[in-house]
Amino acid sequence: MPPKLYLIDTTIELLVNDSFIDSKTYAFDLLDRNLSRNIVRTGEVNTTIPGEYKLHYSVADFCGNTAAATRTVKVRSSYTEADSTRPVIVLEGPDTVWMDYY
Image 1 (cartoon, rainbow, N blue to C red):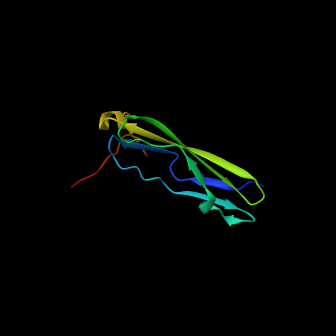
Image 2: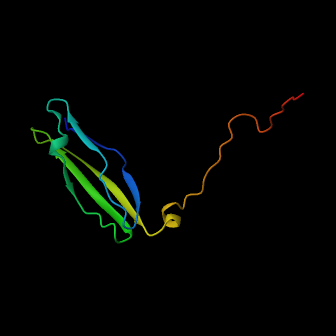
Image 3: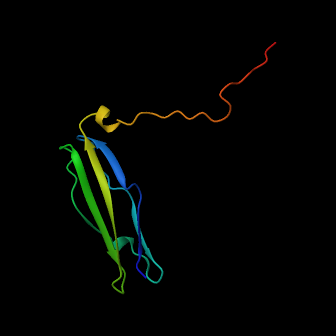
């Protein structure tokens, strides 16, 4: 049975010249237990150049079973580009509320 590889934050968004700190990554195996120290990461992030970067993670247990995962790092040139998703307002409950006041 292959190990399990867990990425905290599969997508990270940064602004140009921000510091990139790789989020936590964990690996566990039923027999070998914690394999987090054995995780190999390939790929680079250049925070001085806007773009989308892929980081690839892989780990193998002592029987040779492997697991892999990918993290996307998006380097944006401005706040507008980084936050282009419109907010969503969700109303919970009735759309009209009557209040009595004295």
